[in-house]
Length: 347
Image (tube, rainbow, N blue to C red; front, side, top):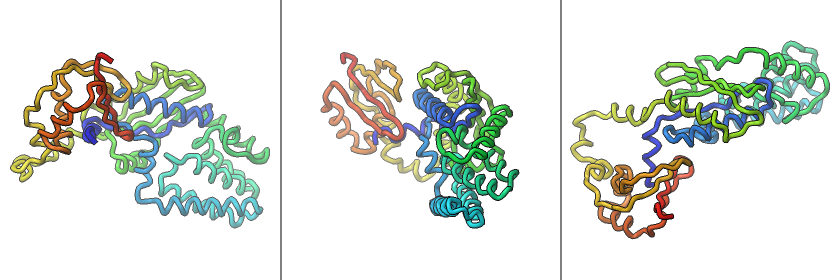
């Protein structure tokens, strides 16, 4: 609650799941999480969690997702009963609904399942080219599918292995422009990042700025993925620099009209930020998002402390609360966004 305003002071970076080329989907997932953690630890940017990003993309399309899952269940049941005439349209409709719900970005496994069953239905009917096209979607969404997620007869399994091998040899390309525009509209980040990791451990990232700029960042990591490798921090720092400091806060300030009624009657937070807070001379040690920095200035000299605290309890009461705290630890935490621990340097 105290630091509820803090995330708005940082630029935001939306990292979509990385593609895999020549590696199983689990490696791509581990790489995505390692980079997301490194961005969060970097400390200067706000990074939506995978759950938060999923909720943003799904917003307003819960019904389509539910119906997509129902269509998949019906199509799979029909396929198991060898009724491809019923299964194919059900599965095709399921894919259409998943597209509306943007599931290809955050529910890749589910969408790959639909493509996989549909491919088998088409191959069973002798529609080889169409079946292979569905397997190409499986390979792109969930590399190593038959090893980690689904099983089937020898024909589709062998064909999928061939498709995956061919895809690994192709040059990776980011999604189409319309897709990116849609993601910017929904998630509203300062920087949107997509990328790929291959069997050599090469991670290639493409960033798209809100102003239309594009940049590339790459580095090599070990496979299996080790989130403690220095390369993750280097890439995170480069992306944070591209996002720019305080982009969200800067835009918000520019949108405010000078001389408005709000200026004549300032809010509690605005008024308290202008008041000189009482001193609290004890030096403190501040831990921000997993990285440690030391600060010899009193914590109450920080504008954010009094802006947020006075906005909740009022000036004099705020000072009394701070001075009444045990000297060892004062901790404020918002698990979904930011955390700060203030610890005596004697500890």
